[in-house]
Length: 339
Image (cartoon, rainbow, N blue to C red):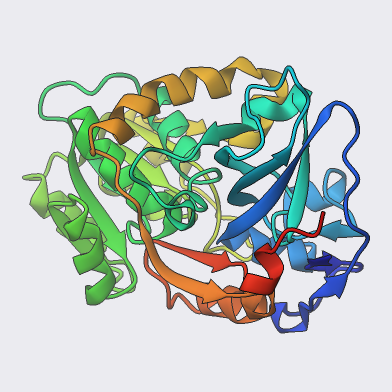
């Protein structure tokens, strides 16, 4: 079968290629899933180049690239909660492939495609929506009138955080890389959005909050230092990633943390699941009603056809050309059953 195999760390995502690998033979305790579509994530660009912290031990070559997917169960153990024909989505390294196996013990990584959603809609959920929700839960229930600032509000994680913030009762503000991306974030519920290329954006945030600053900040890109200039007294800063840093970590003026009594809270979804597998159940029990009620909507804005388009998709994502989520839809040849 075809897959995007990383046999060595690459210098550029342009070097990503499609390989032919053995067809997976599931064990008695494994599900075999035909992948219909796979989500495109910024982490993919880091994994391919060995730039992610997981590359030190958890994700080493050779491995198949990709973090999340939607597909159809082909075979499964009789005691599996998912059976042949079920459409599911999930998160697991190796999703840029025609098929993937998931052990029964890891079946909690899967969920059924929500009613009314297409597999291409759901392919971008597994590595974004629960991350945004899990982080926001750490901030606690918002008080009346609470404000939330979402950085990269037009990105895959950010636009989910915008929707969730609105659903949880926040007044949501955002930052994004252009006026068109700000318009995109506003279409999902952000009241204000500021271009983060304008270094005066913290002042704009302060003005929009009548000088009080925002109560909670969701940061998946690495804007902690500047965020401290516009966070409220005793505000909470949720650190979810460093997508904008390219490995160059910030130096933080810790006196601002002290003077404003700010709480810096890190959230790493994968590590949380490794330490506490029940976290996934808690998160999705809260997300289910939000999806069913329509408060969380699909955010796929670009669909690429076939695994051969993975390098282009990763390049476009790295170049900040994509709003919301992009997915790779398997070609007709790729989705045809090989069993």
